[in-house]
Length: 501
Image 1 (cartoon, rainbow, N blue to C red):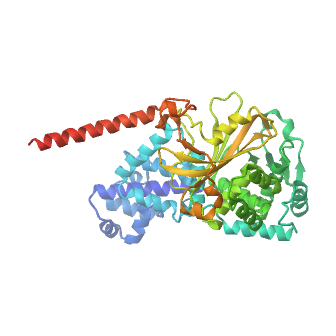
Image 2 (image 1 turned 45 degrees about the vertical axis):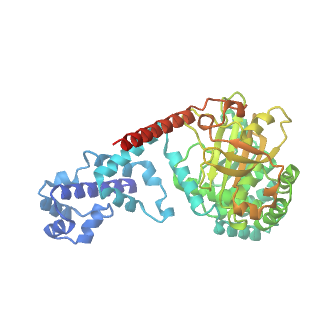
């Protein structure tokens, strides 16, 4: 019997036992006395933690005055059926409750306190999920983001693992190891065969960065059309999988299918390891302090960092999300990555990490239009008419109208190596608060542009003459305004009639 099936049997029995006991108006202690079992044992059965032997089930059925077959039947009626659907669902079985200090049984215990109400609540969540076309993959990626937020995206064990590998392989902290050096490590330490030709010959796989074949021998197909910095990151991540002992891992990069949270988590850990291996924490923090300590923003200073560390903007910015919270006290930040293939109506948000308490751009599923004022989007448009090999950078303050929050935002855009007809852009936003002003002298640059933005055009309160970039009418903002006017009118009428009594 599979683990998932055994769990489903325990949870189903627990649901039925609790419901039948309550139908008969019995307390836990009363049923335990009738069946001749301990109260604690009966409680664990109801919580889905234990599945009794057949003789105990016969005793329980007799105590409830029902046939044995009715008790052990997998059929569940009413709202409890929704609870069972939840505990049997793939997202419930795969969700990493342990990372948040709880177990699946704990969640089950919460919902079984009142199965009818819990069932109604869960049905609501399921309907919301269907309306927004949410799937297991999105649940698991959301769980990973929550895990990162819980730890401020800072993982000392991975930092130390990168330092250990660097020592064992005698790699310098700086300059970052290049792809040839990392290739030698993979081959000498783990016997890899690396192929940089086969992948790009397959028409359907030309967009993949890499494909792992377990062997033996282990083989890694690397897309030779990538930038040297991208090849180095792929190899460093592969070293991370091996050095960290992460066997349950995705075979491809980019993702084709998310199969389990273990793969999501292990891919994240190997990627974090790669960033720590390539961009040494101590050296990078010293260089960042120099850049942030300038009185004026300099695009050239940011471009020099990219060149110095042989990094793509995405790798550098993502590494900053790991260092800024602990080393610079900048815990309220976000990271975004957009891409915009030629001919596509909308740019796509392909990666998001929000460590702030403020709503920031997120994936849209209701046909809303991203605010075109974000530099992350305007640079995509600007970049379409310039040298395809160029990297464009920007820094500005973004004032989100809906959330009444302001972020100092650094943005960089470049062409996609595997799709020359598309560009990507990444943005790193730092909440404008006392920590930012204390930690970044650069934050006081009076020449930094200040842009009024919002999440989407549909939610934005800016008047038409105040935003030449508006791409859709503010229908959601107007609907909210109309609702507020009606609420205000009701209050005023109520107060007026009350005063006439």
